[in-house]
Image 1 (spheres, one colour):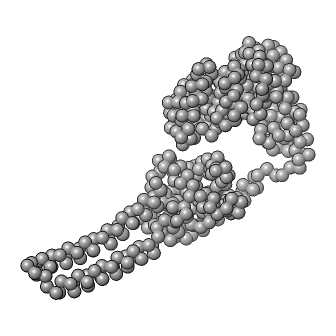
Image 2 (image 1 turned 30 degrees about the vertical axis):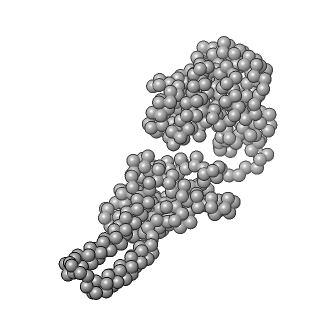
Image 3 (image 1 turned 90 degrees about the horizontal axis):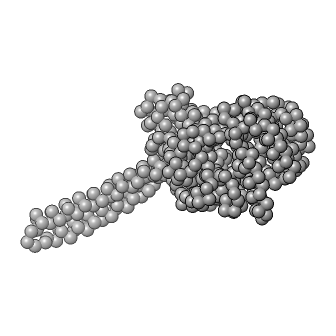
Length: 468
């Protein structure tokens, strides 16, 4: 429960006491007076007193209720502090604390959400984002942080201490927010941070937050990749593949506390000094028919530069079209046979949305690669229907859960789903694997669920291994 909701409950409880106690006191006074003065028989004045007190009580009740509901603490939509109450609250906190930090959290695309999906979804976005921020802070050990709705899609969070204490937290929160969706609606969140070293005046601090936010936006736009003509980009990608201008990074995957193997990631280095990531270059390669050539080159580069890695067990993302291609298979088998001393094991990670019905042929390919210590891992289990079918029908070595299941909330919420996939995999002798582990809590849950392989920034950072 957010702090504003707790404060609202406290306020309503105090209001109820303020209403109830005077009435109770008046009734007690009336009864006492009657008993003392008219023990045996009631006097006519009793009725006068009763009517007078009743009229006063009714007036008092309505007066308190009217004034009580006239002063709102929480915003009706977001359930955070209203702007008026937030400003009063923060003023007191700033005066009380020598150092105090304010964080601005903004939903940048709220206007577009209201326009495209309707005001109802816009309101839901405000509520869900406020709760997401509150839960994120709670997971970071920050309880009862005041959060209020300033305007539009802007929220202010107050924290005790200077901004150096929370700068990394704010940056990580904005990064994590890139994965945040509400009913398939993409949410764009930005932030800014300031503290009372800038000013003790709350209004100046809030102005500073918006100034800093604008500066961050301008810096981001300056460093953002310039738009490249599609034809020019295609030419640059072709040249990068031909010249093998790539950067290879890797991340370790753990089985219990030991490194089992490492996953390799590749980005292309263009002649103009910029980089192209898989999400962008794969579309171009598929369009130009360069996937097969690229993936042959990728396997070669990783194996030939094996000395750059601390382990000779590599996981590489390969397209299923390449894996089922005869020329690719012939090349892989010959190349690996000639370089068997340079690697111990290779894992090809594959996934596809369209189901390949010739599973008998697919299985024969998978089994033929095992003699070269090449194993197959099915990715996106729990997301793609095909991944579940392949888990059931193919002789794969491991399956990797979709990143949807990597956060603590989803791991607990979808626990039965994960356990179900685990059971199917274990019965077939297939190992399970989960990525994007970022906290000790999610690591503990993964172990409780008996997932074999774990991967993520909490365990190992990405390391650059090779650049050509």
